[in-house]
Image (cartoon, rainbow, N blue to C red; front, side, top):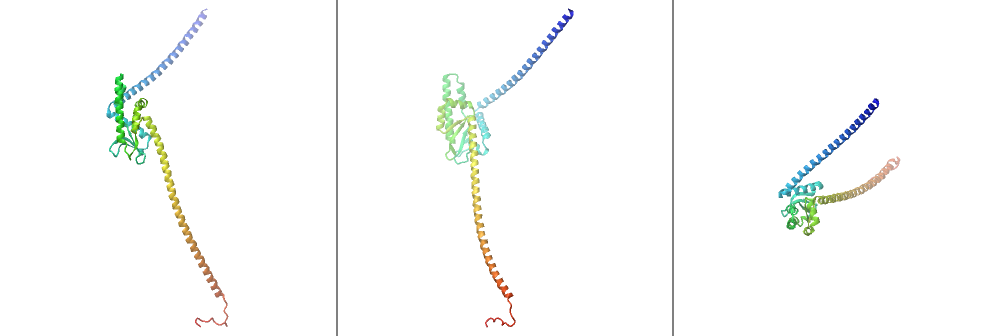
Length: 295
């Protein structure tokens, strides 16, 4: 009986040890899982802090008129430089009317340059977003339209130069949110701008437009090189034609010279044959000598 109790005690002890071991493993697994989650949470918090810093910096930039303009210009320059070759654009270009445009995209043809302006009425847009009641919203909406129209008028009057630029210009809006708001809720502003040959563009739409322009530019360069090759081949054929004419004339000259040589050779052969006959002729002793000259 004592042995049975001891055996049972051993079994109970083993069961307890197994249970403790299993519990320890599960506890360790949970601790590991918690640790992994803490790492993920810590990384997410760092990203949030970085994003907060970026937002604060962006707000600081956009809060100043001068900084806001610089931000728009920098964003525009980044997109243009990322897509187009350097010979297709010029930043801060001065037109013949002394107006300075943020970016002038060159098409390589007279009157084909395209002006892009990077400023936008952010202050009035922020006032529109900050409006807390219908009255304030209506006032802010009215002011926003006034500011946008004024900017459109400035672009149209300054950057559409006959014989120098295209009869349209782009108003670059560096914030997709403002561009989306215009497209969705301000069709009247879009119509107003289009009638004055000014078109709104955002970072995404400008990037796509410039990509298409680059494709057209590459096709045009290929066609230009093909035309150059055709021109040079034409010149080469002309040179070969002139050379062929000279060879033909030289060939005729040689043929005539050969004919003269052949005729001379024929004459010399006749003379040689006559001389040989005279030399080989037998003259007898009793024969009278040929009569002398004048006899």
